[in-house]
Length: 125
Image (tube, rainbow, N blue to C red; front, side):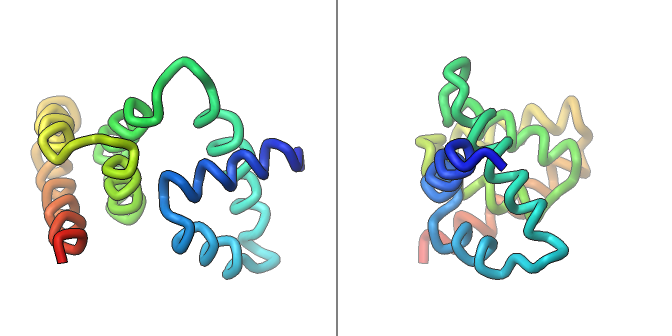
């Protein structure tokens, strides 16, 4: 493991997904899934999310579309919160999800709209 990339990744992961979520994921890692937590933190957050080619908000928009296409509601919920932290607006999220209806299918977009409404409702409390 590259400690420098891991530390950068941990910082970015906390900034985007929230320290509470990330710290719990790391703390709850066991011998079985710890290697995955380290891999995701180092390579995803420490390498790819650090690249200068796209801003964080753009990466968030892309993730919302991809997670909709892959039908991954748990990760979508997490990345919706991250997108909002990265400056993406609800209107922009709506546009991304409408776009996914055309290219990923209406059922996928419908599920993502449901997840987004849950996230927005939770945040408005």
